[in-house]
Each structure stands twice: as structure tokens, then as C-alpha cells.
Image 1 (cartoon, rainbow, N blue to C red):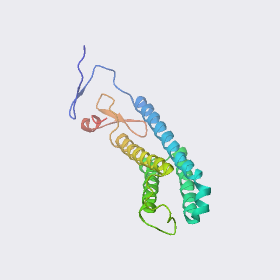
Image 2: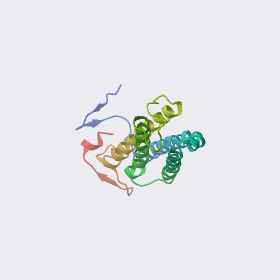
Image 3: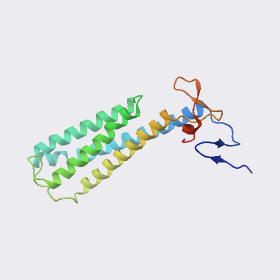
Image 4: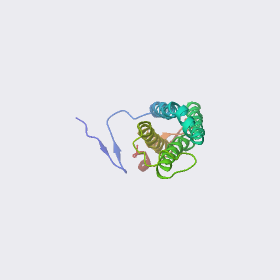
Length: 183
């Protein structure tokens, strides 16, 4: 029976040390899952607005134009997730920002009568609106998690067990054990 002790200052395990390739594979899998989830959420947001596009244009044409912008933004941001970006902040900030913007747009049309939408003031129980709020909340949560996950992997790479950690260039460089223990 082996005992594992983990702390910020000391790390001991009888298991084989993780390698740079294990870390890279784990990071790639996590990144792929997050990006796929983000794409599904963005396309869900687009579909919710597509479903309401015709009736919205008939009742409030300016809001219909706003829906077109939301749909286009969701597609563009989704395409960015497909192509990727070396910085997790630059990749995921647009996802979270779109979620926040559309969330506030929904709240704005429910609180104030505007030329965009004067019929929905106080209508907080709209079924598709509630679905959109749920999707937008998940977009913000996944975006925030992906940024924090990406920063953690960038700032404190996983330890190789010998006081060194993989560098972005593929070489192994010495690191402080305190930062490696956070992974």
C-alpha cells in the first residue's frame, strides 16, 4: 500500500512520473472537449434566435435585425473555436462576451420599452427566452472555465516528477515545485 502526499511544497508518489507527452495529450483532449462544447452552445444560441426570426421581423423589425447580428456573431465566434487560437483568453473571451451581451439584451428588452422591442416589457417567462438565458449562462461558465484552465496549463505546467516541466517548445525546463503542485 502506498501513501500519496501532496502539498504546495512537496510532492511524492510511487506512480511513474508524468511526461511532457502525457501533459500535451491531456491538454489537447480537454481543449477539444471545451471547444466542441462551446461550438454546440453557440449554435444552440443561433438556433434559438433563428426559430424566432420570422415572427420577430413581423412584429418588431429592429429587434429582428438584432437577432441577425446575434446569429452572425454566434457563427463567427463558433468558427474561431474551430480554427483555434494560441491564447485561451483570445479564443474564449468572445464566447463569454457574446453570452453576457445577449443576456443583457434580453434583460434590457424586458425592463424598458424601446423601439427595438416594446411588446416584451415584463415578459420574463418566454420559453425560448429562458432557453436562451440558460445557453448564455453556460457560454459564460464554459468560457470562464476554459480561460482559467488554459492559463493554469500555461502558467503552471504539470510536473514531470523530477522538478522539471515541459516547455512550449517541447524541451523540459526546471520549474518551481510550488507552481507544479497546483495541477
